[in-house]
Every structure is written in C-alpha cells, then in structure tokens.
Length: 229
Image (cartoon, rainbow, N blue to C red; front, side, top):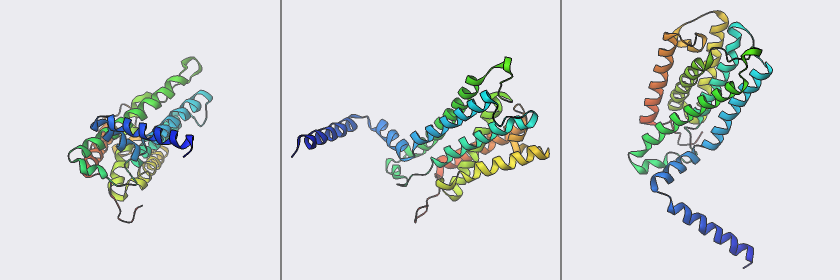
C-alpha cells in the first residue's frame, strides 16, 4: 500500500470521526440542507442580488414609472422559484425516520432561504443606492419582500401539486401574470406584484398565499413520484 493511500484513508477516517462528533440535531440539519442543495440555492440567490446591483448601478433594463418595477419583480420571482426547487430531494424524505423533526426542518429551511433572498436583494439594492445619481430601488425593499414571500408561497403550492423539481414553473408563470396585469393597468389583490408596495390588498393576498403554502408544505411536504421526476 502506498503512502498516498494511507494518507487518504487516514483523512477519510478523520472526517468520519468528525461527523460522528457532531450533535445529532446539527448533523440532521446539515444533511437536510445538503440533500436540498442549499449551497447551490444560496449561490443562486446571491446571483439575484448581484444582478439587481448591476442593473441599478448601470441602468440595465430599468425604465421609469411602472416599468421600473419589472426587473425587481422578476428577480423576486426567481428567488421564489429557487426556494421552491429546494423542496426536492433526490433521496426522498429520508428524514421521516426522525419522527417529529421533519416538519420543523421544512419550515426552518423555507424561512431561512426567504430571509436570505430578501437580505441579498436588499444588499444588492443598498450597494447600488445613490440618490444623487437617481439610483434607487423602485418602491424600496417593502414591495420586493412582499413579492419574494408571495412567489415563494406559489412555489410551495406547486411543489405540493407537481413536485419540488418542477415547482419553479409556478413563481415564474405568476411573475408573467403580474407583469401583464401591470402593463394592462389591471390591478387586483391577487396580482400583488402589480400593486404599490404599501397596498394593503396586495400584502394580504401575498401573505395569505405564503401562509397557506408554507403551512401545507410544512405538514405534507412536496409531492413525490414513485418513478422520480
């Protein structure tokens, strides 16, 4: 046996020993995050924040009036789609063996990713902020936060209906619906992204969708298909 092989085996044993030293709760959360591709999801959310920063700073695809909200709305929909896709695991929900912990893992993961999405978009807007040059996020972060949560709720509902891997369809399709409503001047609470950031009806509609989607996902989890996705 070569020296390199011995060193590789020793490193593997050391890593395995380190894993065994983790508290069971920490190890469970870490494995849940890894099987849901949370690092990739965070990279995608970071990319959304960077796109918003570049678009604001360099005036890319950033019109005036209603058109000024198009890109932030699209990025909020992308964030909701990313959160929705993390509901899928290629290994199924093996955490069912942990009994009562699975609903808490589902709930915590969605809330953490929603917070990360809002935070990264806020960071992108803050980095580009320059009122003297007229660089500000249309409507501020209030409307963007509402849209992220509302579109995430749509993604969770689609995860229950068609599975986590395809749940991205829901938020992006709903973004298109809201954009067409904005262009046509059609304003209803259910098209919350086309309404002002402080609009009460838009907030109620978005929060109801988010709450229903989150509660249903927490209780039942995503749809799983015997033949995979």
